[in-house]
Length: 49
Image 1: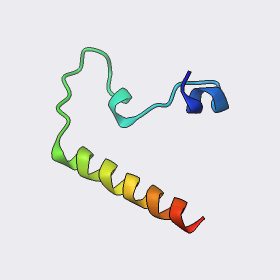
Image 2: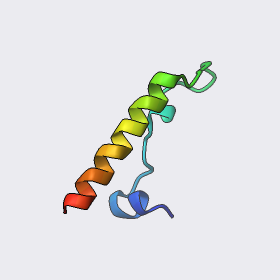
Image 3: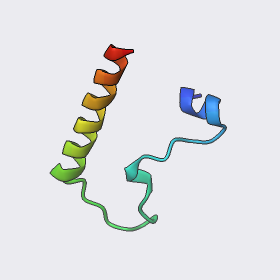
Image 4: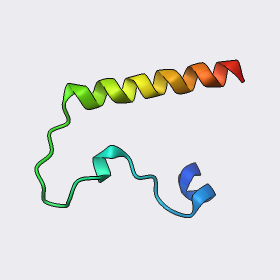
């Protein structure tokens, strides 16, 4: 079980889960850049705490 699921009792819904089943999705560089930026911010905040 993932830590998120253990804490909140449901699966983590990442942006990849937001699309309807059967819908064609191309993960473009924008999503990769957004995710990378979010990870960087999280790492900075963890360092400050």
